[in-house]
Image (spheres, rainbow, N blue to C red):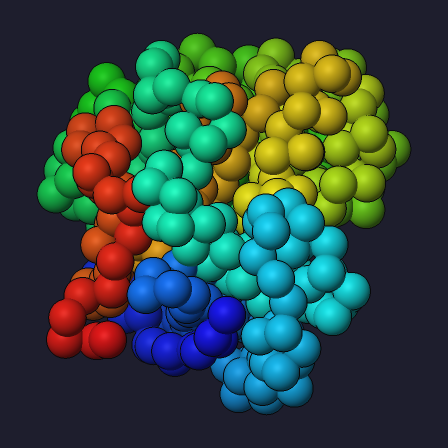
Length: 340
């Protein structure tokens, strides 16, 4: 295999704010693996919240490049085990390589990833469209500019209930609330009944990731399901979340790619938990990888590429919340001609 990387600056259509901070762009490293005339793509974005730097990511990738190129692509799952040994502390890069391996393997064998897994594109969940923290007027304007059946509302302000009340006046769409660790247990329990009455489906990560005692109370008393995000990053976290959350939000970059994410889905199901897969700020490369898991999910948040003004790739797209798959093998992704 040949390993290459392509750095890009992904620019957001609008300034995006959450409880952790504000950004207008994100640096992305698109990784490619090539063999026998076919190329697979994967992605890792340098999210500042996680202390990632694009230059450091490129340097680390160059250090392992000879070893990666020497590995055989038997199956993506077997390759992942070898890659994890090379990158034990780099889940974002591991994710990019794993996505690229699944894409390449599918292209070599003429199958979409979901087809190789024996899945069918039936009864797929709708993806939400995310509205970041802003003034109510700006949030309403963003909803009106992008009519959608399900919105994820980012919260973490002093007026969270008032914001949801105001937004509800302008749409009949379902709401999902993401507090990004900004609430206390008391707030989550107190807010939940009214949020439920306002058409909210669930609350994502209301408390700090380490507030397990608080989450135990919220889990027992909340009028709405609670979904883990920051509290669920890797495979070992699934079992830990049982009894504290009703479901988990799996992020490919946090856990290390499609290979561990699929195992996490199975583990959560065995424990009777709901399953969601989310995204970071990422292009159609990463989003198309996420889409391969859709038949296994209750919920999905895969709007990352929609929030960009300069998506460097084409792949799975969203239309009114529904995923539209291209007629291409692998993850269905292709870089645009002007960025290759």
